[in-house]
Length: 324
Image (cartoon, rainbow, N blue to C red; front, side, top):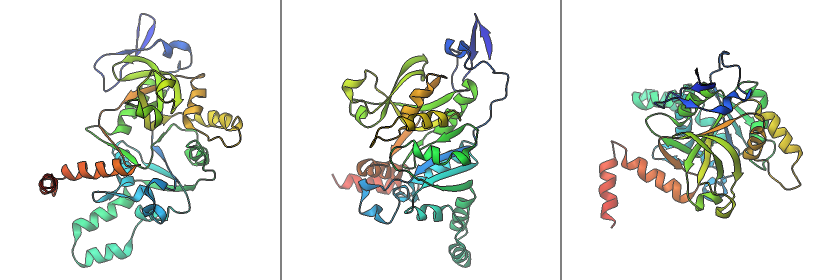
């Protein structure tokens, strides 16, 4: 970081030119000589009942639905580990035991594979439980995506941490979380995932309003939860994927105290409170986004991942072509 005409300049790893942001000089981010803690913990809320996929999710978590030959949640975890995450906290519910079993050892299966000399399969199965340190917390309240974060506060501690959803993932040259982490290390501020959207997306996603201070990097001025087209001029969606500073816990508690009966606790609303105290940035992510949270998008993810698979891709393409 250098000074440029009175402004501090942040060099983002993924950009070719300096990012000049007067907000950094407001006094809210003054101590840049202090070493910024690396992001090592990831929270994955996974307590939802997956009602969009009933009846298949009656006894199976939606996060365990397969995309090709792996459950959705494994893609999420693999992306996190590739980004440098070492500790993964699942906030889950009573129906999520299969998710826990997937990331645990299975001695009977391992012995069976070893007996029949299926070494490649054996190594891939054993590697799943060794990817990270896994912790499981039961969610206590189920009304809004802010509660899982509060429920895991005792595990997350006072360090910055990442949050992603368990039914969506990115595929690209640089993992989505790594892109966010790079930005956080340079800005020392909370960073959220941004993706362009359309009118329909304003009914599905939280929407980001703000100023683009560098191509692909926005200083957030407002976060609106599912505003619908008439409620905002922005078409920049906030998808799953956050780097959060521990001050978010206080903002969530404040938001919780102000909830009216029947209202849900949204992370976006707590972040709107946090905006009054410290800057928050949004980063356009480079990569292909797969949302497996609906039937159609789950099918699209399977088709695209199958077509990209070196083992079956060509044959599958020929099959699809034969249908039309």
